[in-house]
Length: 181
Image 1 (tube, helix red, strand yellow):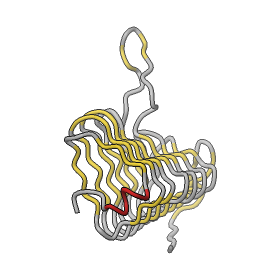
Image 2 (spheres, one colour):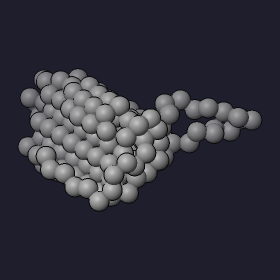
Image 3 (cartoon, one colour):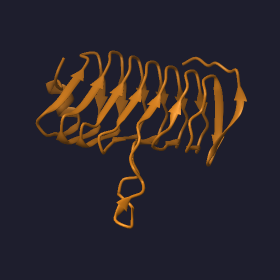
Image 4 (cartoon, helix red, strand yellow):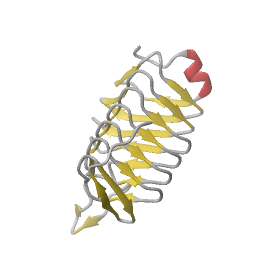
């Protein structure tokens, strides 16, 4: 499917400018979300079996994209943002609990001597990652497969696979773990 179904349009607030690539699998459940895509050559790809509820998805600028892999769950009041030509990737079988925020940019440029000093960066969340309530994932972070990030944590740096990270800023506290939905 290359567009939102009539039911998805009815249940959500969707604003999309032209020249956007949409690939939304027909099995995707999107309920009470706000989706805004502005700019040129942006992409939103959501694979089969995904459920997204009460979430804000924002793709702004030129060449920005969000990819959500198979069987992911995105909980209430999450915020997914890709800006400044960067990509946010959430691979298969991930679970985002309530109020998770994932951003490829700081939201506004900061200048020093006329140059932007806070450039946007890609974010990648690999397979089977669980982000607990109120987790924030900042620009440039990669989360390895089979990780858990604890409640109220802020990830400012990448973490390797099979780890548990907690705190603000988050630090790895357990290694060699696995988990199941």
